[in-house]
Image (cartoon, rainbow, N blue to C red):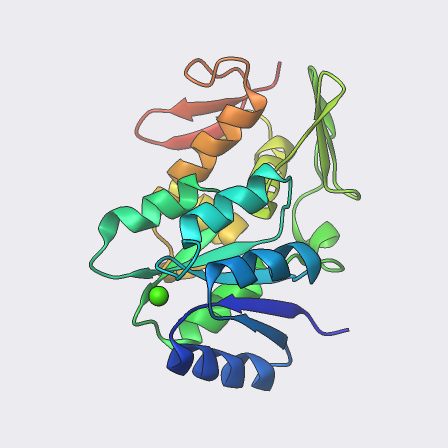
Length: 230
Ligand code: CA
């Protein structure tokens, strides 16, 4: 079955070129030309990934993203941001997007990001090192993509889950941001280090009792991040 990509973008020319290229790569596409339609399709059409513009009629991209996340939807979301709007990248990640790409984008880079962000349903299990499944009150089930804290489910996005799983698999080993981008995001040189920092921050807000004083996801100043074995 082919993966379904929802394109939420009000510039028809961009929609058409995305549609053409994604279809050629074997994806099924759905389009929404405004935010309200995008939200409806995001809820009802069960997309495997959403490409989401920031400036949209009726409902903006950040708000759409926040709404889907607040409903517990973990679908990978890539924001399409304008190159000159530096803050939009961080706003997007903080709204719960997994990634962003700046306009004008190269189609090659966009397709690489779509591929890297779509949930790898079959390959994923063998893709990363075997995870440690529990640490203290934190339990991660790689088969069901579920994380529990003190027995209660924690809603994580795809990248938050991948990052936590990767760090948990090698407790106390420090990874640089470059290594995490390469291993978890699989980008090589396309990546931006702030993507790692913001995702770490979001993850801490969800799993730590006191995000400012983490006990699971630790910073090694000047080096990187690690998962602390309790
Ligand atoms: Ca727009």
